[in-house]
Every structure is written in C-alpha cells, then in structure tokens.
Length: 267
Image (cartoon, rainbow, N blue to C red; front, side):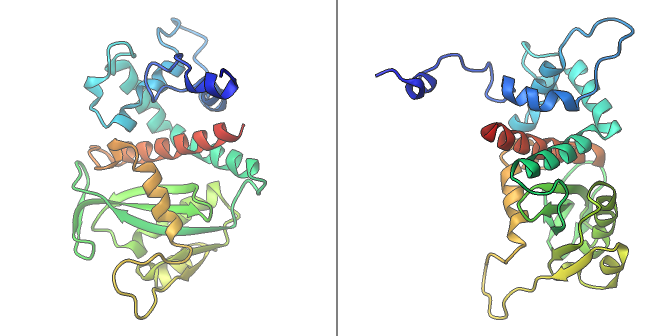
C-alpha cells in the first residue's frame, strides 16, 4: 500500500553519487561559503558542485581520479587550496558546532572538553617517530566537546610528545571557544606545561589500577567515538597529505559533514 513512508523508500530520484549534498544539507552549508567575486567572468561551476567534488574525502581517491561529470581536478584542487589556506574549513566547523549545540538546547560554546591524541599510519611531508605509540608518521591531537563535537583538530609529527602537542591546541581553542574552563586528558598530558599554557584546568583521568587490556574510560571515550565517526571517510584511514595544512583541512571537512548530517536529520 502506498503511503508517505513507502514512497520515500521506493523513490528512484536518488542523488548522482551517495556523497552529493542534498538540498537540505546545502541550505545549511551555503551561507558559510564566501560569495563569488562580482568582477570577472562568471564561474563555470557552482559552489555546490565544487563541494560535491571534494568527495575524494569520503571515497579516498586521488584528485586526478575525480569522475568526468564533476568539475575537473585543477578547478576542485584550486578551490580546496584557497579554502584551506584561508582557514575556511576551520570556521565552517566552528559555526556548525555552535548551530548543532543550539539545536540541542545548549549554549553555543562549551565549558568542558576532552583532549586526546590518536595515531595514524606513515604519512608524507613532515613526520616523526613516537617510541611510545610505536608509529612513524603523524598523530592527530584533538579537543572534543563532551558530546562528541570537534572543537580543535591539529595533526602533528609523531615525535611531538602529547604534553607538548597539547599546548597549541589549548591556545587555539581560546579564540574560538573561550568559555572552556576544564579539559579532561590521560597521563600523557600530566605536568606543568599543559596546565600553565592557558586558563583551562587540565584534569587527568587515570585508568583503573587493575585494568587488563582495553577498557572504556569515563569522559575520554568521546574522543575515540569522534574519530570512529570521521574514519568512515576513507581518506582519513591513512595520512597521505604532503602538508600539515591539507591534513588539517580534511579533518575539519570530515567533522563538518558529520555535523551537517546531524543538523539535517533534526531540521
């Protein structure tokens, strides 16, 4: 029997690709992108198509393998570099965090967060070796809200210790999220340097004394969940970017798309 539910289920008007933005998602994102310049030639491709082409994030394919019915690689990569260098992906994520928090009935800026780092595989560009995590490449420092929204993301060479790598993350967070008063972290962030870097109080969450193997730790698990969410994007399974800026831009782009989906489901 045909009803609104079955009509939606059997609807054949599917997007060209699964990663294409729907009209509702684009209505959320479009105000956050800069308007095209009024002077000069009219752009050959719309901003929406450019953003659709950055689906290389989800598919994990090289730029040169972008399908022919999407904007060419040279155009998409030029837009990506321009937005990356201007910090657009960072500002979009910051705006979406505020929107999603207000949608959930909370204050736009959080007051508590979790700081954690996760390892990646060997990467191009700047890299190092971390003897503790047994990795050669980079790791990703993250400050995440208590509800799983990414606040600050910072890929770093693996040879930077957590207590040193946390300092720029904490300092950058003061500009975007100045009301954060407390941050939870593991033993790798103990010591005076993270505590004195900003006005944020660092509380160390210690593991149970008799823990054997993996265990979910209070408060800190929200970071692991966040990285599980964005790891659905195949480009983030590894860290193939030649520059730290590109790696950071893709992390913020993945976080932004997660927030867009959450906002879209409840709008």
